[in-house]
Image 1: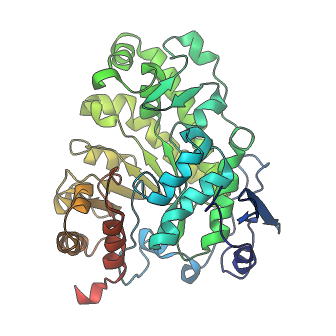
Image 2: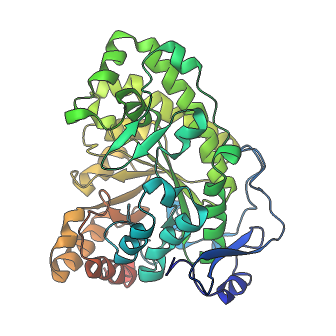
Amino acid sequence: MAQVGGAANRCLEALSRPGTQDLQRVHLCKLHQGRPRRTAVKINMQAAATEPATAASPPKESGDDLPLLVRAIKGMPVHRPPVWMMRQAGRYMKVYQDLAKKHPTFRERSENADLSTEISLQPWRAFRPDGVILFSDILTPLTGMGIDFQIGEGIHVDDPIRTLEQVHKLRKLNPAEALPYVGETLRTLRAEVGNEAAVLGFVGAPFTLACYIVEGGSSKNKTYQHIKRLAFGNPEVLHALLSHLADSITDYVRYQADQGAQMVQIFDSWASELSPQDFDVFSRPYISRIIDSVRSTHPDLPITLFISDSGGLLERMALTKPDCISIHSSIDLQDGIKRIGPEFAVQGNIDPGILFGTKEAITQRIIETVKQAKGTRHILNLGHGVLVGTPEENVEHFFKVAKELNYDQL
């Protein structure tokens, strides 16, 4: 598999990087036949892959040792906003397209630690963002609960769950046993990037996961009729499912943190399909439960919450008490900051469509957005993920402009 991994000697270079002394360094190398292998250098680990998700978090680092993104989200002094992009690894990059031709299924690419690591690092090598996010999917942990799914042209869940009997048959997720490739990828990313960038994990929120599980995949015509039939006809079934998911996702967040994630983002992509009062019943309590529970064991782990098209839910998002709220591009950034209040870091919120425009338009929008958020704990990002077909050179320009900013010059 051409292009997978880097030179073997970079594995040894990683040994001297700060912030990785307690991690397993695994680096992808190329064999002369083009097939990937891993060269592993093992040293003392605080949270081994075989330990339970409740194992102790990695050792604390001093402020000076933390990546820029973590310093910003914690309110430490920074000279510019850190920058990364949702979906920064993926289909718009030619190197990803070439890899996908040889490994055509998404689950193969995301459930193989070598491939997941390589894809996660592709934008890091190309653009040097301040955050390197795990290449995975919010549905990945479902198999560990006994729910199988396929990702092709759309998402298909083999056996939709719509009864209490089905809920009771679900397994509680044990991430270390069910998802060891996620832990391996996160550890490798920490060894690779050191503290030059933050390693980011992510999970799906219970309601959004339930949408896929109950609907049997992507909702046909986005009507969400099956999950709303449960919500308003048999709410006890939906609550039982949401409760199970909340407990499992809590352990999954802890596992990601223990394996090297320095921030975890919760995606509740379909929560805006709920009216605000129903969000208070079927989504918000379970997000709060995850955040509160994780915070009881991992108080230093920053958690970001993102909801697509969240204009009607911002104040309710704030009630879940994440560390950072990712503001969708449909919301005026200054208005959004006022609505959530001063206690949160903010992320966003440039329209991903701007990346189809001219470099001048991209530069202007970046500067406008950073000025709007100046004085807050701001992480520069898009208001949603990078779109398929986005010109790669425009993503490169976005990062170049963003990384040359200085608050003192704005």
